[in-house]
Structure formats: structure tokens, C-alpha cells
Length: 406
Image 1 (tube, rainbow, N blue to C red):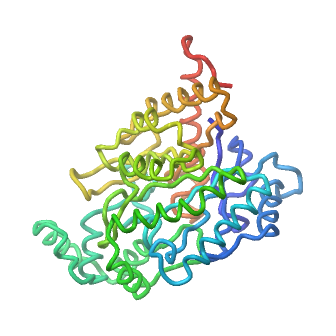
Image 2 (tube, helix red, strand yellow):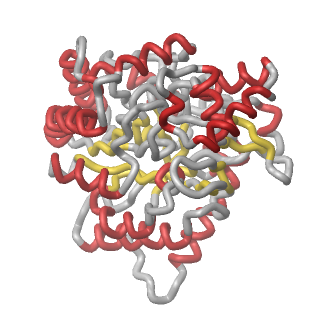
Image 3 (cartoon, rainbow, N blue to C red):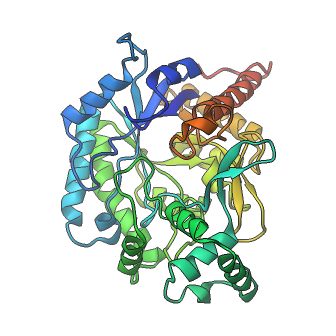
């Protein structure tokens, strides 16, 4: 398992020097300043590679850009409207430029409008650390009484609506504004920041698109771009929905094992793969992450390891980001399944046997609490998570009956 670290670029408060000191072996990054639908030029790609390769004092970092996260899929492509065909051609060209620069893994998602959704970015835990959280009552209060989405109340049970109405009534203006900013945070690291009016307009634009139509649009997209990825030697991997259930009346199509199976079978090429995110998928109790790795691991090209703890039953539900070893996902079993997949790939002669992963999200602890960095991406909290994951890997690899992959 190759230990990587997400970096948002030169403005990230976590520096390349910090990443080196954390012991990461590679970097996950993207060109967030380039709008969706535009071509990533060779010059911009090379510039980011140089930034990753150099520490503050000019000394070589020893790191390289291993994974793109994300090469964004435009809303036009998702809806198949406007300049969506031009955007697909731009996407293909970006893949060619990335491959020419030696980058061979591209993570993307196909979530309408919002990349991930939370109601709290710094919810206080009993030990004083903070984490990201999705509170269902707060979210329903936002949906029905702040956003005032037409027909929103029809999607919730009466008891939940009553709780949300009371919660909204007890919110002061500051909390209502904070909740609005949090839910409409948009794409992490992106130049795209959504206002309420923006969000209303985007939601309205999906009025005629259900889950089956969105899935067909995804398959159409993949049918166009995956052959190009295969031609140039890039593995593509779709990130799951976060959270993995319907929100704001928008369809969700990458939330379960069956969702992934349908998509990889529809465009059945090895380059059409999976980003296995244990935190996103783990919110659904039905998602057996170790089992998914065992059954679909041959198409897993990139892994996010984090943990969530469900606070309520059923779907949708409340949850928060837990310690990497403290949530609903059995991280030991999952990592063992990943190591087993790597061993099988090595035995089969696959060049991609060493699967990159990154410690996803993390609690703000210690000096993270003063940095006010990218939500979910603290320096020390992720370092703690990586250390815990590294400990599991080391212990499992030391078992007498395990044959190392490398």
C-alpha cells in the first residue's frame, strides 16, 4: 500500500515540507484553479509537479504527483446539456496531457452539484478535538426552512420535520448563516463557491434527471473517455457519493456495491475502476467494506481510508467523522483485504500491485485547532491517522503466514 497525502497546492496551509515529515511516499493533487470543462495544459501540470518536487528551501522533496484528485466532471456532462460534448473532448485532452507527464491514476466523481455535504465543519468531540459532522435534523432544517426547496417536506417523515422546525426556530441568525455556508461549501479546494440562489438554480436544472438517467449519462461519459485512458495508460476511478444517500432531491448512483458493479460492467475495461472510500461508503450499514474489497478489488485503483460513526439508524442518518480506527468500519479487516489483493496482483504480474491510499480527513487536534486549514484536511490529525493505519499495515505484514506482495 503506497502512502500518499492530499495537497491542495501552494496555498494549502499544509506544506510539502509537512508532507515529507509525515512520511508520505507520494502526493494526491489537482489543478483546482482551472474551471470544470477546461483543458489542463501541459504547462500547468508541469508547474504543479515542480511544486510537489521541491521543499521550501529548494531541496528536492523526493515526492511526485501520483494521483489526480479530481479531474472534475462538469455539470454539463452530468446533465448532457449545453457544451457537454466539448467538455468531454477537453477531458480526453487533459487525460492525454496527464499521461504524457507520467501521471497514471485519475480520481473523479459523478455527484450532482455538491462534492460532499456536512452540517458542521468543526464539531467538538469530548476530548476537545473537532471533526466534520452530518446532523440530519440540521440538514432538514436547512432544506425545508432556509433553502425552502419546493416539495422538500414531502421527502421526510412528520416526526423528523417537527424536530427540524423546532431546531430552525431555535437557531440564531449566525447559526443559520453558518449552516448555509457549510452545506453549500461546494467543491473542496475549488474556485466554485455556491450561494443559496446558485444552489436553487442548480437543483432546478436536475428536475428531469432521475437516478437511471444520471447513471446512463455516467456510462455514456465513461464509454467516451475510458478508451482514451486505456490508450494512454491511465486508470480512472470513481469516488462514491458522500454521504451515500439522496440529498436535496438529487439522484445518487455511486452509493453501494451494486452501483459500482453496474458501472464497471457497463464499460468493462480494467481502466474503468473504483476509488474505495471507506468513510463515504461506510455510512451505509449495508456496505461491507472488506467484502467489497475482496469482490471488486481487482478494479480498485485508489483508496481513501477514514472512518465514520453512525449516530442514528436507517437512511438518511446522522454521522460524524470518527478516529481512523474508531468508527463503524473494521479497518483491520479492510486493510487485510487490501494487502491480500496486492499479493494476488503481484502473483499475477500486475504492474499496479502497489495500490495508493491516503489517510482521508482527520480530526483537528493540537495546533490544527489554530491553523483554520482546509476542512477535513488538518496536518496533525491526518498524521495521527496515517500513523495508526501504518501500524495496522506493519502488524499484518509481520504475520508469519502472510506472503509479502513486494
